[in-house]
Image: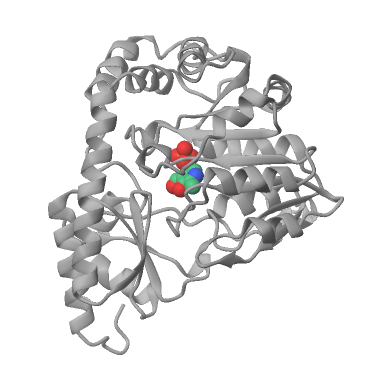
Length: 374
Ligand SMILES: Cc1ncc(COP(=O)(O)O)c(C=O)c1O
């Protein structure tokens, strides 16, 4: 037994934090249940990675005894070129989660405040709470970020605001002009972290012109990731764009080798595989149409989504549904943590995966819950 309790040296605020429960890995489910499973739990790309990314990884493998390029030169250069920014306006992260946390680490401390919305991506609040800062959770309106409520929640202590567009798990978005109005309404000293993890999936013309803010030198950090449409979630690579002073501040706190060698090589190749991106977006659009039409036919309610996932309101206990779907070989996510105790979130998979999900959903809806089971 240790002679001292870890409690004595813990930050008091860390005791209040409820950790993020990630999606259950397929291998774990298959081991536990002794059956094959499909994973529709983490909004991954069902088509997998770009073949060009795989090729780039193969080519880099022999060099992994070396540290990666801590400055991420080639990837940042390509991203800067694509977005017509300077290289010093781009920062790489081990996924965008890394950059969500880095923003908090750079700007927040006990006594400061960060704001996000009630049913926003959970990592935002973890980032704020992890720094011991005060967390303000603005209510949502019609399942969307209520930007006016967020603006009203600003206090002299507020430093950082996290916005997901589209938001996970609701799949809803705000428009470019709504964000324009919001940015004009809040004090310009505030940092707005604008998380656009699902950027490529959103087909709407009134969606984001986020990089315009970066060009204008506003205090906005735009986050994108290679985990979703590029299919590289396991490699952990994302990036942020912002004005030079902001990126320099983040770089002071960034862990020097946060973007690993294989991830940098794969991301660089994936960026130029437009065929894979477009194919993934089209496959998602087809899958979303199929999924939502089928759900509507059976009278199951859902929140219309512009992403690659759907919040499905089953009207039953989501933890029970989660377990029962697991037994059917389908991994989804229960949404109680996000304030939806009767909803699950399902990723838009391949057609046969969607069919399996729908079949499993019909099955569990038809079969009564056995007392003492699960
Ligand atoms: C809104 C949102 N932001 C960020 C992420 C995390 O992405 P990454 O894998 O780049 O850390 C996710 C992943 O589910 C997400 O839904």
